[in-house]
Image 1 (spheres, rainbow, N blue to C red):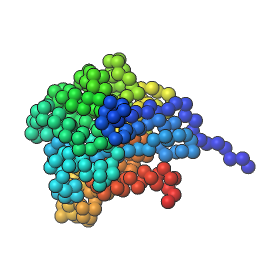
Image 2: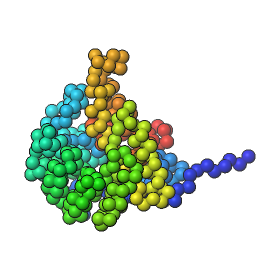
Image 3: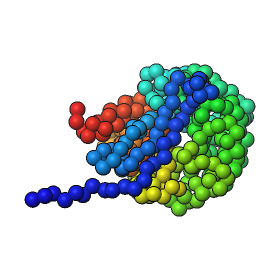
Amino acid sequence: MELPDVKEKWTAQINQVTIGATKDQGGTRARTVTVGGQTTMPFLTFEGELPFKPVIAGYVADTPPGWPEVLINAIGKEINSPEEWAQKCVEEYGVDLISLKMVGADPAVKDASPADCARVVEDVLKAVDVPLIIWGCGDDEKDNHVLPECSQAAKGENCLIGSAKESNYMTIVAICKADKHKIISEAPVDINIGKQVNILLQDAGFDLKDVVMFQTTAALGYGFDYVYTILERARIAGLKGDKLMASPQICDVGGEVWRIKEAVVDEDVLTGWGKLEKRGPMWEAVCAGVYLQAGADILIMAHPEAIKNIQMTIDQFLKGGKE
Protein backbone atom coordinates (compact mmCIF):
# COMPACT_ATOMS: atom_id res chain seq x y z
CA MET A 1 0.00 0.00 0.00
CA GLU A 2 1.32 3.41 -0.95
CA LEU A 3 1.85 5.73 1.99
CA PRO A 4 0.19 9.15 1.68
CA ASP A 5 2.41 12.21 1.54
CA VAL A 6 1.63 14.13 4.74
CA LYS A 7 4.35 16.75 4.43
CA GLU A 8 3.33 20.38 4.80
CA LYS A 9 3.66 22.46 1.63
CA TRP A 10 4.81 25.93 2.67
CA THR A 11 4.57 28.72 0.11
CA ALA A 12 6.98 31.32 1.48
CA GLN A 13 10.30 31.85 3.24
CA ILE A 14 11.36 33.58 6.45
CA ASN A 15 13.52 36.66 5.87
CA GLN A 16 17.27 36.37 6.23
CA VAL A 17 18.74 38.94 8.60
CA THR A 18 22.50 39.44 8.90
CA ILE A 19 23.94 41.07 12.03
CA GLY A 20 27.43 42.52 12.21
CA ALA A 21 29.76 44.05 9.63
CA THR A 22 33.30 42.98 8.78
CA LYS A 23 36.07 45.36 7.75
CA ASP A 24 35.16 44.91 4.08
CA GLN A 25 31.59 45.89 4.96
CA GLY A 26 32.55 49.02 6.88
CA GLY A 27 32.68 47.52 10.38
CA THR A 28 35.22 45.85 12.64
CA ARG A 29 33.66 42.42 13.29
CA ALA A 30 35.61 39.26 12.49
CA ARG A 31 32.43 37.60 11.28
CA THR A 32 28.74 38.16 10.82
CA VAL A 33 25.74 36.15 12.00
CA THR A 34 22.79 35.39 9.73
CA VAL A 35 19.45 34.04 10.95
CA GLY A 36 16.20 33.16 9.21
CA GLY A 37 15.80 31.91 5.65
CA GLN A 38 13.72 28.86 6.61
CA THR A 39 11.16 27.31 4.32
CA THR A 40 9.81 24.97 6.99
CA MET A 41 9.02 24.82 10.70
CA PRO A 42 11.90 24.37 13.18
CA PHE A 43 14.17 21.40 12.45
CA LEU A 44 11.72 19.70 10.05
CA THR A 45 14.37 19.34 7.36
CA PHE A 46 12.31 16.73 5.48
CA GLU A 47 9.79 19.47 4.62
CA GLY A 48 12.06 22.33 3.65
CA GLU A 49 15.35 24.16 4.11
CA LEU A 50 17.02 25.45 7.30
CA PRO A 51 19.96 27.38 5.83
CA PHE A 52 21.08 28.93 9.13
CA LYS A 53 21.04 27.33 12.54
CA PRO A 54 19.65 29.10 15.64
CA VAL A 55 22.27 31.11 17.51
CA ILE A 56 23.04 31.99 21.12
CA ALA A 57 23.75 35.54 22.30
CA GLY A 58 25.59 35.89 25.58
CA TYR A 59 23.78 38.13 28.05
CA VAL A 60 25.98 41.06 29.16
CA ALA A 61 24.94 44.18 31.07
CA ASP A 62 26.60 47.51 31.82
CA THR A 63 26.06 46.85 35.52
CA PRO A 64 25.44 43.49 37.25
CA PRO A 65 21.71 42.64 37.33
CA GLY A 66 20.04 41.63 40.57
CA TRP A 67 20.75 37.95 40.02
CA PRO A 68 21.16 35.14 42.60
CA GLU A 69 24.63 34.23 43.84
CA VAL A 70 24.39 30.92 41.97
CA LEU A 71 24.49 32.73 38.62
CA ILE A 72 26.87 35.50 39.68
CA ASN A 73 29.38 32.91 40.93
CA ALA A 74 29.02 30.84 37.75
CA ILE A 75 29.97 33.88 35.65
CA GLY A 76 32.68 35.05 38.04
CA LYS A 77 34.30 38.41 38.74
CA GLU A 78 34.01 39.33 35.07
CA ILE A 79 30.37 40.21 35.68
CA ASN A 80 31.59 43.54 37.08
CA SER A 81 33.17 44.56 33.77
CA PRO A 82 31.03 44.51 30.60
CA GLU A 83 34.02 44.09 28.31
CA GLU A 84 35.54 41.24 30.39
CA TRP A 85 32.12 39.60 30.69
CA ALA A 86 31.68 39.79 26.91
CA GLN A 87 35.15 38.34 26.35
CA LYS A 88 34.37 35.41 28.64
CA CYS A 89 31.10 34.76 26.80
CA VAL A 90 32.93 34.60 23.47
CA GLU A 91 36.19 32.90 24.45
CA GLU A 92 34.96 30.43 27.08
CA TYR A 93 31.26 29.93 26.40
CA GLY A 94 31.53 30.08 22.60
CA VAL A 95 28.48 32.29 22.01
CA ASP A 96 27.72 33.54 18.51
CA LEU A 97 27.11 37.18 19.43
CA ILE A 98 26.75 39.47 22.47
CA SER A 99 23.50 40.94 23.77
CA LEU A 100 24.34 44.11 25.72
CA LYS A 101 21.64 45.55 27.97
CA MET A 102 21.91 48.98 29.61
CA VAL A 103 20.55 47.92 33.00
CA GLY A 104 22.36 50.79 34.72
CA ALA A 105 20.60 53.41 32.60
CA ASP A 106 17.32 52.70 34.38
CA PRO A 107 16.44 55.67 36.60
CA ALA A 108 15.58 53.16 39.33
CA VAL A 109 19.04 51.54 39.14
CA LYS A 110 21.98 53.90 38.47
CA ASP A 111 20.43 56.37 36.03
CA ALA A 112 23.60 56.12 33.93
CA SER A 113 23.91 58.86 31.34
CA PRO A 114 23.62 58.28 27.58
CA ALA A 115 27.31 59.15 27.27
CA ASP A 116 28.23 56.52 29.87
CA CYS A 117 26.19 53.91 27.97
CA ALA A 118 27.84 54.84 24.68
CA ARG A 119 31.27 54.32 26.25
CA VAL A 120 30.21 50.83 27.36
CA VAL A 121 29.22 50.03 23.77
CA GLU A 122 32.58 51.25 22.51
CA ASP A 123 34.45 49.21 25.14
CA VAL A 124 32.55 46.01 24.33
CA LEU A 125 33.08 46.49 20.59
CA LYS A 126 36.82 46.76 21.24
CA ALA A 127 36.85 43.76 23.58
CA VAL A 128 35.14 41.26 21.24
CA ASP A 129 34.88 40.82 17.50
CA VAL A 130 31.45 39.18 17.26
CA PRO A 131 28.23 41.02 16.28
CA LEU A 132 26.38 43.01 18.93
CA ILE A 133 22.79 43.34 20.05
CA ILE A 134 22.16 46.59 21.94
CA TRP A 135 19.20 47.10 24.30
CA GLY A 136 18.16 50.10 26.34
CA CYS A 137 16.98 49.75 29.93
CA GLY A 138 13.28 49.33 29.16
CA ASP A 139 12.24 52.81 30.28
CA ASP A 140 10.96 54.39 27.05
CA GLU A 141 11.68 57.98 28.06
CA LYS A 142 15.26 57.20 29.09
CA ASP A 143 15.87 54.90 26.14
CA ASN A 144 14.93 57.70 23.74
CA HIS A 145 18.10 59.42 24.97
CA VAL A 146 20.29 56.36 25.54
CA LEU A 147 19.76 54.41 22.32
CA PRO A 148 20.68 57.25 19.91
CA GLU A 149 24.03 57.64 21.69
CA CYS A 150 24.66 53.88 21.70
CA SER A 151 23.66 53.62 18.05
CA GLN A 152 26.07 56.38 17.08
CA ALA A 153 28.88 54.74 19.07
CA ALA A 154 28.40 51.57 17.00
CA LYS A 155 27.79 53.28 13.66
CA GLY A 156 28.56 51.02 10.72
CA GLU A 157 28.76 47.85 12.83
CA ASN A 158 25.32 46.63 11.67
CA CYS A 159 24.13 45.91 15.20
CA LEU A 160 20.66 44.74 16.20
CA ILE A 161 18.99 47.53 18.22
CA GLY A 162 16.15 46.88 20.66
CA SER A 163 13.53 47.57 20.82
CA ALA A 164 10.95 49.33 18.64
CA LYS A 165 7.45 49.54 20.12
CA GLU A 166 4.30 51.44 19.23
CA SER A 167 5.40 54.17 21.63
CA ASN A 168 8.94 54.79 20.33
CA TYR A 169 9.31 53.27 16.86
CA MET A 170 10.02 56.58 15.12
CA THR A 171 13.13 57.16 17.24
CA ILE A 172 14.42 53.64 16.63
CA VAL A 173 13.79 53.85 12.87
CA ALA A 174 15.60 57.18 12.64
CA ILE A 175 18.76 56.03 14.45
CA CYS A 176 18.93 52.66 12.69
CA LYS A 177 18.56 54.21 9.24
CA ALA A 178 21.17 56.85 10.05
CA ASP A 179 23.71 54.48 11.60
CA LYS A 180 22.95 51.38 9.50
CA HIS A 181 21.63 48.97 12.10
CA LYS A 182 18.90 46.33 12.24
CA ILE A 183 15.79 46.62 14.46
CA ILE A 184 14.10 44.44 17.07
CA SER A 185 10.34 44.98 16.92
CA GLU A 186 8.66 44.31 20.27
CA ALA A 187 5.08 43.38 21.13
CA PRO A 188 3.61 42.29 24.49
CA VAL A 189 2.83 38.65 23.62
CA ASP A 190 0.21 39.74 21.09
CA ILE A 191 0.48 38.64 17.47
CA ASN A 192 -1.80 41.46 16.29
CA ILE A 193 0.26 44.15 18.01
CA GLY A 194 3.39 42.45 16.66
CA LYS A 195 2.00 42.82 13.16
CA GLN A 196 0.98 46.42 13.86
CA VAL A 197 4.49 47.37 15.01
CA ASN A 198 5.91 45.90 11.81
CA ILE A 199 3.37 47.88 9.78
CA LEU A 200 4.49 51.06 11.56
CA LEU A 201 8.15 50.28 10.85
CA GLN A 202 7.36 49.65 7.19
CA ASP A 203 5.29 52.83 6.91
CA ALA A 204 8.20 54.75 8.41
CA GLY A 205 10.39 53.53 5.56
CA PHE A 206 12.23 50.69 7.27
CA ASP A 207 12.73 47.45 5.35
CA LEU A 208 11.12 44.51 7.19
CA LYS A 209 13.93 42.33 5.86
CA ASP A 210 16.08 44.09 8.46
CA VAL A 211 13.76 43.31 11.39
CA VAL A 212 13.83 40.63 14.09
CA MET A 213 10.62 40.13 16.09
CA PHE A 214 10.49 40.00 19.89
CA GLN A 215 7.21 38.85 21.41
CA THR A 216 8.73 39.29 24.86
CA THR A 217 9.68 36.07 26.70
CA ALA A 218 8.15 34.07 29.53
CA ALA A 219 9.92 31.65 31.84
CA LEU A 220 8.64 28.12 32.34
CA GLY A 221 5.48 28.29 34.43
CA TYR A 222 4.85 32.00 33.79
CA GLY A 223 2.79 32.15 30.61
CA PHE A 224 5.38 30.02 28.85
CA ASP A 225 2.89 28.02 26.81
CA TYR A 226 1.16 31.18 25.60
CA VAL A 227 4.41 32.73 24.36
CA TYR A 228 5.24 29.43 22.66
CA THR A 229 2.00 29.52 20.69
CA ILE A 230 2.58 33.16 19.68
CA LEU A 231 6.04 32.33 18.32
CA GLU A 232 4.65 29.30 16.52
CA ARG A 233 1.71 31.21 15.03
CA ALA A 234 4.03 33.96 13.81
CA ARG A 235 6.30 31.43 12.11
CA ILE A 236 3.38 29.62 10.48
CA ALA A 237 1.97 32.92 9.21
CA GLY A 238 5.32 33.87 7.73
CA LEU A 239 5.69 30.53 5.99
CA LYS A 240 2.18 30.88 4.56
CA GLY A 241 3.10 34.17 2.90
CA ASP A 242 2.31 36.89 5.47
CA LYS A 243 5.22 39.27 4.80
CA LEU A 244 4.51 41.15 8.04
CA MET A 245 5.21 37.97 10.03
CA ALA A 246 8.15 36.66 8.01
CA SER A 247 10.88 37.93 10.34
CA PRO A 248 13.25 35.83 12.46
CA GLN A 249 12.47 35.79 16.21
CA ILE A 250 14.47 36.48 19.36
CA CYS A 251 13.89 35.33 22.97
CA ASP A 252 15.51 36.86 26.06
CA VAL A 253 15.63 33.60 28.01
CA GLY A 254 18.40 34.53 30.44
CA GLY A 255 16.94 37.93 31.20
CA GLU A 256 13.57 36.43 32.09
CA VAL A 257 14.35 33.11 33.76
CA TRP A 258 16.65 34.57 36.40
CA ARG A 259 13.88 36.84 37.70
CA ILE A 260 11.48 34.08 38.78
CA LYS A 261 11.21 32.34 42.14
CA GLU A 262 12.06 28.86 40.86
CA ALA A 263 15.42 30.05 39.50
CA VAL A 264 16.47 32.27 42.41
CA VAL A 265 15.25 30.51 45.60
CA ASP A 266 17.12 27.52 47.04
CA GLU A 267 15.66 24.35 48.55
CA ASP A 268 15.44 25.87 52.02
CA VAL A 269 12.40 27.72 50.66
CA LEU A 270 11.31 25.35 47.88
CA THR A 271 11.52 22.11 49.81
CA GLY A 272 12.04 19.08 47.61
CA TRP A 273 12.89 21.08 44.48
CA GLY A 274 16.61 20.29 44.63
CA LYS A 275 19.70 22.47 44.84
CA LEU A 276 19.40 25.81 43.06
CA GLU A 277 22.92 25.33 41.72
CA LYS A 278 21.54 22.61 39.42
CA ARG A 279 17.92 23.74 39.15
CA GLY A 280 18.64 27.29 37.96
CA PRO A 281 20.66 26.46 34.84
CA MET A 282 18.32 23.56 34.09
CA TRP A 283 15.36 25.95 34.18
CA GLU A 284 17.08 28.27 31.71
CA ALA A 285 18.08 25.41 29.41
CA VAL A 286 14.59 23.89 29.36
CA CYS A 287 13.05 27.24 28.44
CA ALA A 288 15.58 27.81 25.68
CA GLY A 289 15.22 24.29 24.29
CA VAL A 290 11.46 24.53 23.98
CA TYR A 291 11.56 28.01 22.42
CA LEU A 292 13.87 26.59 19.76
CA GLN A 293 11.05 24.29 18.72
CA ALA A 294 8.57 27.18 18.67
CA GLY A 295 10.61 29.17 16.15
CA ALA A 296 13.22 31.17 18.08
CA ASP A 297 16.23 32.06 15.93
CA ILE A 298 18.23 33.96 18.58
CA LEU A 299 18.36 32.91 22.23
CA ILE A 300 19.83 35.32 24.77
CA MET A 301 21.33 33.21 27.57
CA ALA A 302 23.25 33.81 30.77
CA HIS A 303 24.41 30.70 32.68
CA PRO A 304 27.44 28.95 31.14
CA GLU A 305 26.04 25.49 31.84
CA ALA A 306 22.71 26.35 30.22
CA ILE A 307 24.56 27.76 27.19
CA LYS A 308 26.61 24.56 26.85
CA ASN A 309 23.48 22.44 27.15
CA ILE A 310 21.65 24.34 24.40
CA GLN A 311 24.65 24.34 22.08
CA MET A 312 24.57 20.53 22.25
CA THR A 313 20.77 20.53 21.88
CA ILE A 314 20.94 22.59 18.68
CA ASP A 315 23.52 20.22 17.22
CA GLN A 316 21.40 17.19 18.12
CA PHE A 317 18.25 18.75 16.65
CA LEU A 318 20.06 19.46 13.40
CA LYS A 319 21.29 15.85 13.28
CA GLY A 320 17.76 14.58 13.82
CA GLY A 321 18.59 13.31 17.29
CA LYS A 322 21.41 11.11 16.00
CA GLU A 323 24.81 11.17 17.62
